[in-house]
Structure formats: C-alpha cells, structure tokens
Amino acid sequence: MPSIDAFFAPTFDRLPSRLRDAITETPLPSLAAGPHVTALADVLQKPTTLQVSSGGEDDSPLPSLALSGLWLLAGDLDRSHTISQDDSSAAGSFWHGIMHRREGDYSNAGYWFRRVGSHPVVNDLAGRYADDYGDPYRFINAVETACKRRDADRMARLQQIQWTEWQLLLQDCMLA
Image 1 (tube, one colour):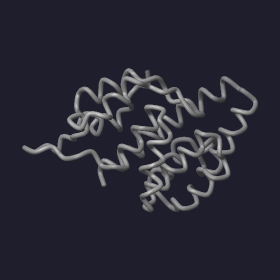
Image 2 (cartoon, rainbow, N blue to C red; image 1 turned 45 degrees about the vertical axis):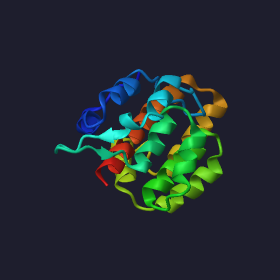
Image 3 (cartoon, one colour; image 1 turned 180 degrees about the vertical axis):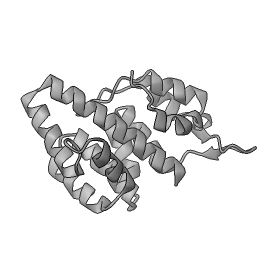
Image 4 (cartoon, rainbow, N blue to C red; image 1 turned 135 degrees about the vertical axis):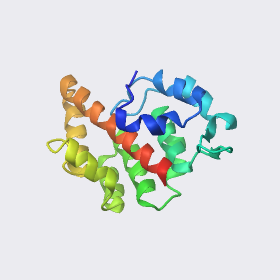
C-alpha cells in the first residue's frame, strides 16, 4: 500500500471516501505493466465516486486527466492511454509518457516526454531526486536499466520516485 505524501494530502482529501479507500488499499504501482487492481477499477467505473469536493455546496466531476492517472494506478494501461492520447496538453503527454514507460516502450515514452516540455512536476521531481530524475529521460533510462537487470533494490527506489511523480501529476491535474 503506498503512503500518501504530505504535499498530496490536501488534494487526496478532496476525493470521495470510497476512492480514497481504494487508493490506499492499492499496492505500489510497478515500474512495468500491472498489477491490475480490481477493487480500484470497480470504484472508477461508478460515476458517483468520480465527484471531487470543491469546498462549496456542489461537487465537481473528476478531471479527465486525473482519471487517466487513476486508471494507471489501477493497472489498466489501455484505459489510461485512451484518455491521455486524446489530450494534447502537457499533462496529457505526461500521463501518456508514463503509460508507455510502464508498458516497456521506452523510446515512445521519451517521445511523449519531449512533448511535455517544461513542466512544474518535472522541475519538482528534479529538485527532489536530482540523481535519478534530473530529467524524465534519465528516469526512463534508469527504469529500463533496472528492469532489464532485475535490480530489486534499484527498482524499489525508482518505484518510490514514480509514486511521487504520480501524486505530483495527479495534484497538478486536480488544480487545473
């Protein structure tokens, strides 16, 4: 189960309780495809769980790019891809790049990250993890190398960075 970082907690708290529960019960996402998390996928298919607290009287729909990220967390790369490929924004390209990185299509991931350009999430990650995420291409290469070598310790560190990346990008999509 991934822990929710302090920076992400205010965004996380805006999500419906069933969705928050499903996220906290989800295993840390793999660097590759999977695992498929049926419990989270089931929650994502219910429209009532896709409303976000806006702090006022009415809730608002979950932004589509946030849904793309949630499908990645659920391990459904195809559903995430369907959403992100139809959004030409930097955030859409970011989710698209993560999806291709997780499916092991590293060169295609690089293509989508080039389309991201300068992005606050990339800058934040570079500041937090300069050795591993100085830029998204370095991270793609690190993931590819660790997966090919089956370096468990390195993969565990990169998974934690990927989890931070997921939280930062979901937060960015929720604020947009």
